[in-house]
Length: 171
Image (cartoon, rainbow, N blue to C red; front, side, top):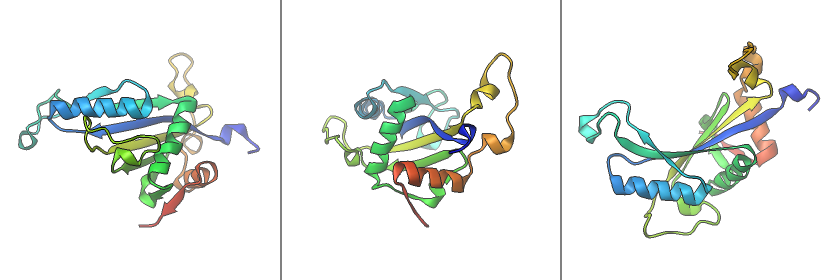
């Protein structure tokens, strides 16, 4: 690419498993995310109470892990391999790619563990351009134009096809 500032970069990759109110499944979800990413998972908590689902505000209802830098690109390749490098067109939004993995045994190199059971997960990849830190830093914060800050859907789809061999399935 001629202009390095226009280059699209993978900022972070987030794995998320929603469980509900079952404490044992929460521990299994944390163990699974640790197995897949090699990182320690944190619990996600409910923001509102939902009596029909027996969920209280502040109760742990899921687990998540965020991975950054080179490790994120490697894990994104593995996650895309789990879905055969095909995602729906609606999975690609401005700055993000989101898709689900139905069963963790689809992930390459991961075998079924009877202690964990059968769980799926959501994968969310966030993309940025160089210079994003200027708008996020604490001192001497600057303003980035909306055209530079936003990675469009078609542009992101082209980047994913080129760098990750992604096939987009129309709905």
